[in-house]
Image 1 (spheres, rainbow, N blue to C red):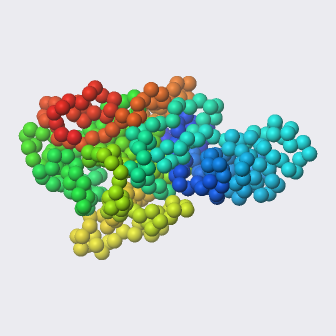
Image 2 (cartoon, rainbow, N blue to C red; image 1 turned 90 degrees about the vertical axis):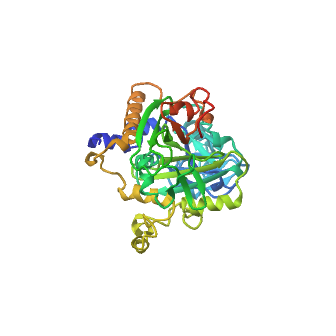
Image 3 (cartoon, rainbow, N blue to C red; image 1 turned 180 degrees about the vertical axis):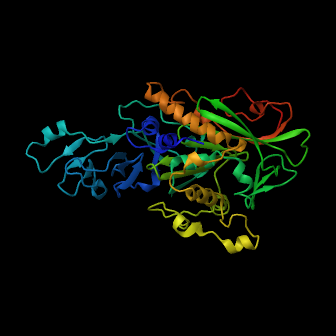
Length: 435
């Protein structure tokens, strides 16, 4: 458990807070690229307790700037998106995507105002169907991340965005909690003998283990940490261990294991202390994703269809705390479902939001299967202390993000899972074992 003051430190993300100042040293997703049309509507971006706006100029260039007009503070969400930047409809002041005031029609000396006034503006890159930004107050920042999926064509990707009514830390802790899959995801993750690794079928994920008490082996890595959930397999248990690895990549990313030719990255980006934006990335490395497979992934695995289960303007979910996540209690009584909530995504978000916006970690009772959650908290709090003391953020530079990967497989007793299921920073993997 965490002391109350530590819990507040972990979940507070505004300017001047330890975690907030740390987060501002990293590149974070701000919105989907497809949200911004050239010359189109200005979109709100709430990030780390700050109100920003994103827009794409008529020429196609993306800008992210402070929402409040530098003149009188009205919202630039209302602004005209013109060739040289956003023009406030109140008095006509215009600001470009670099924060420069380019026109002040109410002044007889606009050049002087342009010299004095500088509007808050932030660097932008577009990769993987996302717009990324960094809110560093002094310009110090790493190179933008280049995860494996960020180098793939868009027809290899499926990116789901959703607003979550809970702290970013609760979302991350759910992503790196392997033990809950046996229970919460019992409808989708099925114990099946005879399979070598986690394999997806029409009904979900087949796993060669029914072990609901995994042993976690956690180790620090330059990007954060990784851990192995070691389970007893259903076949050859005297010779093999079932191992599934998960990576936590500071500050908000998790890489989870997927079948060969597939991959999954997920993150929870803080909106403020009590809300987060979730981005879930599914990708294929062995060829473009077919429409049929994309639809299966959305509906059958995640349980969400953009535009139906998630509003594409607000990104609010249809399943929310105010409707008890549309849980089907009658189906639970009929033993047709374990959770009464369809889809892995929906199940995860229901339990994350079910804790309340900020869970009281001082009253928890943690056990051995919570070791990754404990390590996450320690790593992030230590990272914030190091940065406050003038040190570099964890994994800031020199990490080959494109090589990072998680894995699942059967590992013989006496052999290191690190050798057979590498994370991309290990030595070259051994040729034996399954992946």
